[in-house]
Amino acid sequence: MPSICENIQQIKSEIGNVELVVVSKYRNISELNDVYSCGHREFGENRVQELSAKAAQMPGDIHWHMIGHLQTNKVKYISGFIHLIQAVDSLKLLKKIDQEAQKHNRVINFLFQIHIADEESKYGLSPDGLRDIIASEEYLHFQNVQCLGLMGMATNTSDQNQIKAEFSQLNQLFTEHNPGNWDTLSMGMSNDYLLAVSEGSTCIRVGSKVFD
Ligand SMILES: *Cc1c(COP(=O)(O)O)cnc(C)c1O
Image 1 (cartoon, rainbow, N blue to C red):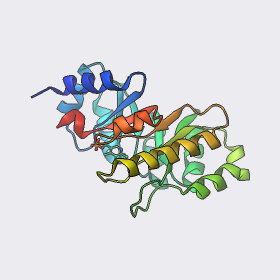
Image 2 (cartoon, rainbow, N blue to C red; image 1 turned 120 degrees about the vertical axis):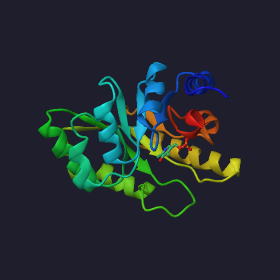
Image 3 (cartoon, helix red, strand yellow; image 1 turned 135 degrees about the vertical axis):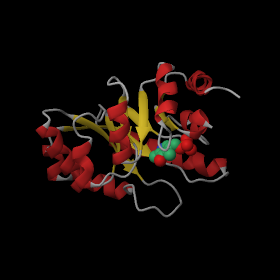
Image 4 (tube, rainbow, N blue to C red; image 1 turned 90 degrees about the vertical axis):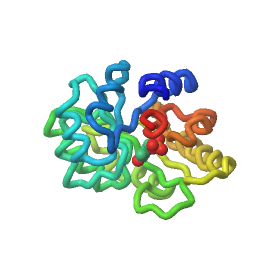
């Protein structure tokens, strides 16, 4: 059976310059250390408590990506060190991140999460929701947050055409709203990252394909 490091190397060889975020949710510290020993530094977690507990136990040069829904009252636990918040889905949350970043005298980078899947989900902005935030007066005045682009998850289906259409839609939205300095289009997971890369992804988030 291939090791964690061999899996990472395999995925990296398939994706060229696209960034790989290893999704380490539910994995233990020993498994995270295997990833780290392989030279990998981009880690993704979807729960604040798990993320901060792991960050406290792992080396300080890791880039932590928050990839799950973030509650406003939990922003403070990660605002001092988080590398990229990939799942901003409301203006209220963004306002909170801006406030907390200010306390740490830093700028926090983030992505807007867009709901592209044909599935019920509480999270992710609609294209109109994204437009409304970007056009808002409040958004213009944030000083301690910096948008780098968009993130989205395709429907969990075997229909490749549907997945492709959803990634393509996200890429179009990215192009349409990019003010010029967005460089991150985060799409693609274990089951669909090759399709995501062919549709223009610059960042894939992979868990099971690395660890299982
Ligand atoms: C869990 C998760 C992933 C990784 O999923 P795999 O199928 O294990 O690769 C990627 N993105 C998000 C937002 C996740 O929650």
